[in-house]
Length: 154
Image (cartoon, rainbow, N blue to C red):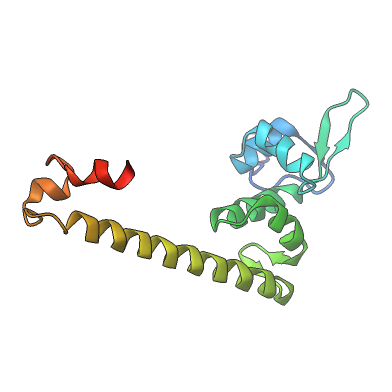
């Protein structure tokens, strides 16, 4: 402390509870651009009030909400599903049991997509390995000419 002055350190990660955040401040605290924040608001994921001059004002709790949205997007959930689940976020990284049925359905859908992709990969691999010089490494890399393919698509 300097004589006559009191130094107060303010953490950028946790704004004072009584302060509303402008969009630029929320963006700085979350690392999410203003354009995406406006998109989240348009999808109903994020609420904002308006100042007298029309600026968006976000509650400080929006910081954790944006982090929850990003986390849910990161596991492949679409925004319409996140809208269903966002109220099931109890604390950072933890979901309430109300989220389980929706998440299980998405997991099943991903399992089905993975199975389809594995099947497609196996079919492509079989096609690659079906030629007379299938053991040649250049064939697997797609460098060898293939006379059979035009007949398949013609």
